[in-house]
Amino acid sequence: MAAERGTARVTCTAPVNIAVIKYWGKRDTDLILPINSSLSVTLHQDQLRTTTTAAACRDFTEDRLWLNGEEVDAGQPRLQACLREVRRLARKRRGDDAAAPLSLSYKVHVASENNFPTAAGLASSAAGYACLVSALARLYGVEGELSEVARRGSGSACRSMLGGFVQWHRGERPDGKDSVAQQLAPETHWPELSVLVLVVSGEKKAVGSTAGMQTSVDTSPLLKYRAEMVVPERMTRMARCIQDRDFEAFGQLTMQDSNQFHATCLDTFPPIFYLNDISQRIIALAHRFNAHHGRTKVAYTFDAGPNAVIFMLEDTVDEFVEVVRRSFPPNSNGDQFLRGRPVGTAVLPEELVSAVVVDPVPGAIRYILHTKPGPGPQLLDDPSQHLLGPDGLPCRSA
Ligand code: DP6
Image (cartoon, rainbow, N blue to C red; front, side, top):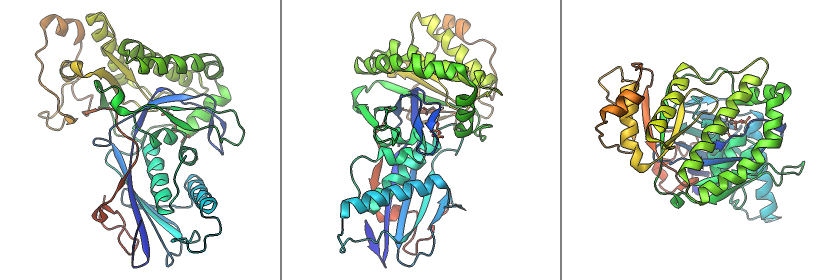
């Protein structure tokens, strides 16, 4: 925590995560307690991250929040719940320590920026709340179990508090104390695992996850069956796939769970459609690619939006990227079509092209982002990285 002219400031970064066993549905909407456990892979912050500065000062007259440079309402219940919980933990930790460095009664200013489109189905709320809670916790000197606090911001945010492979236990208690995230394996566990994000559309999604999953809980019998009968066994199986670094089993289960999640959306009344025509073409392409190779070499998963996240081992990346480029030829000269980690060139065998690349759709994919599993939230030590100045106001635009 850096105190300058009475303003304490902390800046953290936090990652996006992608669920391979999906969370969909709450049993308690206030505490954000899920109807089933879920499991995710934390993505590397070199490619996708949120950066958040939290500042507190005696002179601040109200809580204020800037998202990607725009001031928004800081009174949102989920933000206030996170703030209240971090302060409660700080109070518990400090006891009656009157010499504590920062008064818990000061108002806070928070500025947060994503380096990717907000609400494009890339789990921006997960990274956002994980980052907020990390920065506030540092500001107030709180350590230890914080996934429970991040969960109050957004369910999936609790999984972004850890790197690598993470499970969020549904928990049994009504107070949510056992509904926490736990790391199954660090990001170094499976170094060959690679991730491509195929960005189909940067537009805001039609039905947000919070509203969508509530309608599903209220109306979908399939969702109830999934939570009670399907997910418990899949959680155990998925943890084993990861432990054994068994890509084929991991990939198959990942695809099946994504498909079942979207089936529960269709079973919701009125139905919710997150996959569009391009998403469906990506699904078909992945299956043709796997069929051609006679095994599961790529595995897709989709959240509450049309973008695909595709897992594969490192040795498949160059070839599959070329297959995607041929199937969805970029509209412009291809500049910026490939982002993130470097991708090598691949010459596709003719029989692969004729079996897999059918009916190309130019311009359907905006860009491909190449990334990999990564670590949890980080503290930025360099004061020049703060998004808020010593006066507590944004110091540079998004
Ligand atoms: C489809 O965590 O965004 O991405 O808890 O209401 O904030 P709230 O919902 P949110 O839902 C994420 C749903 C999902 C699946 C997943 O990440 O597990």
